[in-house]
Length: 74
Image 1 (cartoon, rainbow, N blue to C red):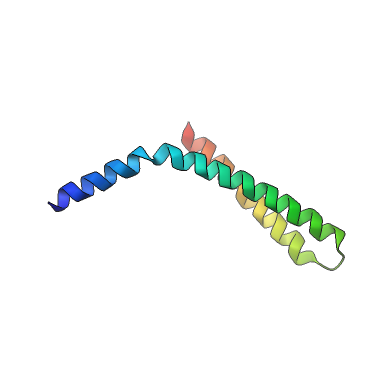
Image 2 (cartoon, rainbow, N blue to C red):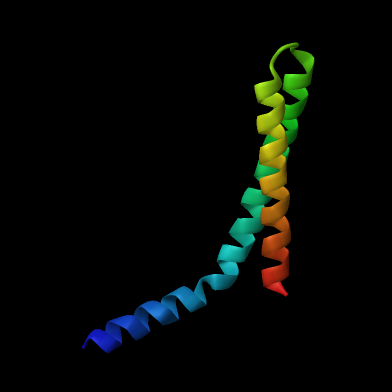
């Protein structure tokens, strides 16, 4: 009985795996855009290096997410 549940869950997760890669790429692109917006808004205001650093971190994580998702697709 327990084995059937495990097999059902494994099959369900394997079937949605390709969609998760597209979601990973999508969220990565959103993070890159958000990071760029934060970076440039932090550059305009003097003394707000926290925004600039947060923008760079978001952009770096977003780029990593996009590359990771693309590599997993192929």
